[in-house]
Amino acid sequence: MGSNSAEYDGTHEHGTHEHGARGRTGHGTTGVGRRDLIKRSAALGLISVPTMSFLSACASGGGDDQEKAETGKKTAKNPLGVNDTAKLEFVLFDGGFGKEYAEDAVKVYEKAFPGAKVKFSATQKIQSTLQPRFNQGTPPDLIDNSGAEQMDMGTLVGKKQLADLTPLLDAPSYDDPGTKVRDTLRPGIVEMGQFDGEQVWILYYAYTVYGVWYSQKALDSLDEQYPETWDQMLAVCAKAKKKGMAGWTYAGKYPYYLPFSLYPMIGKVGGREVLDAIDNLEPNAWKHPAVKACFEAYYELQQKGYVLKGTPGLDHIQSQTAWAKGDALFIPNGSWVENESANVMPDDFDLAVSAPTGLDSSDKLPFGTIWASGGEPFVVPAKAANAPGGMEQLRIMLSEASSKNFTGKVKSLTAYNGGTDGIELTPGLKSGVAALDVAGENVVNPRLQDWYVQLQKEKIGVSGIGEMMAGRATPAETIKKIQAFADETAKDSSVKHYKHQ
Image 1 (spheres, one colour):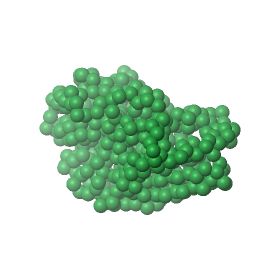
Image 2 (spheres, rainbow, N blue to C red):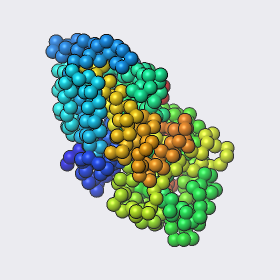
Image 3 (cartoon, helix red, strand yellow):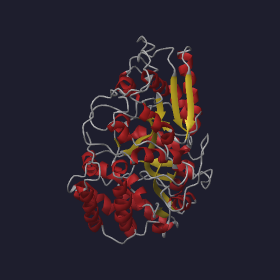
Image 4 (spheres, one colour):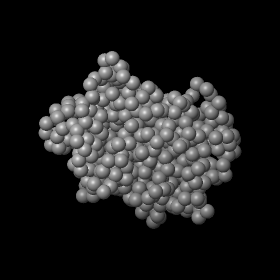
């Protein structure tokens, strides 16, 4: 199957499921959210990082390395010192986002450096095409390292095969010489590109919003607002039930979708440090009172009959279809759901997303605390002939105009914090932007699904949360079980371990 089908083996995406995904490629909106998810998962889920601390990104000299282009003169218009006659080679992953957005950004580069020849290509076979070139010391200058054939990031970083992108992040942004590129990015983007220490090896270009998705029309028909406390949530679910509608459904066969709202709720109730301790596999991290309170809250939905009957047997498509038809009010998901459910969602559905409901006013973080994070990993190889050119191309892509172009064409946000003014946004995208505005700095980014795929999906998801939400285990039993899984992973020397910096 193609890289848009069932080969995904990353974090939380659907492709490892037995049903096999529908292969979708090409331009426009088709399957974009899904691709974003797949890319993130492939990009993040497979990372394994040596625990040694990485030295500088300088490449060790090999006999057959390509010659580096001489650097150009640094000026206000050329802050990275690009050689204006040096060739630039840019290889893009050819997936659901298409290639038009990148081709458009290349044109801007060519206009800025008319004497430079740009070789642009798009492929689904990133690894088989590019790994031999890394080994020979002749990689391209900029790569969108994504898809099912994505090169292992941890290996690239561990072998010092990537350039540190700090010069790009510290350069003036394309639109405002008074603002650094790093200060124009959405929360979490810089951190996600770091492995060990301050260097940034990856720039994630797309941006996914996770949360609780619903039909504004359905909520209005109940004469209700989105609930901010758990008592309000239970009241809304009770009202929905009276009207023959379940409060919740979720991907019962793949219950690792539940964390898209459950983890940020834990962060809201107990603070970011609770999520960090869980990610760091610290002893007893899952026994924190905030975890217990949130698990008990979700279990109450099940116990009170507010979860759509039969949900534990549904896959992601079946649960999303039932929800889109109005059988259930809320579903935990990511921003790809707008595209993935487009064919079953009524025109007047009025899709909306919210940050998770909290417990009450004693929560550590305010209502609006949400999980959002980057996807679509771009890298500049350490042995690139024209690394400044690769970074300059990224600087162009992080301009307001390029970001707007991407969002308008593929219905996804970018890492650039803005770029939505004047674009006709789809309801879900509009709601996602609004949710990020409400969140402000209160954006959390749990890394468990990137760092420990099997632990997150099979153990915590299916064996832990899934069993609890099916009514087959209590919250106390589930927490004990999950803590044991986490301890087991922490002690497993065959697994690479990570810590929040």
